[in-house]
Image (cartoon, rainbow, N blue to C red; front, side, top):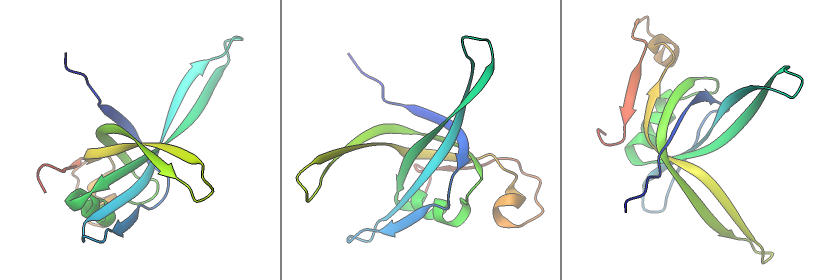
Length: 130
């Protein structure tokens, strides 16, 4: 039986993406997306809870993210969950779960992204295209 590992988020970028280049010359972009969950508590009072999700993208998509994504921008991100095991020098082990982003759509107006006066409202970057 096949399984599914797919994540879709719509949220805001919490800080400018950190873009690095690996020893092999491949770019990697690290960024965080903030989302909100709205609910009512036991007293029927409206509450909001923020979630901050770590994301990573590679290659051409990372280059495009470096160019266009800035803190506060609204995005649609699609990818898969990945948990990394990190062995620390102190001997303990950390586990870090993040979204490996394969597709991103900028939901802010294009003029907000590149400074032009275009009225396009969506600009999509798919890692399969670049």
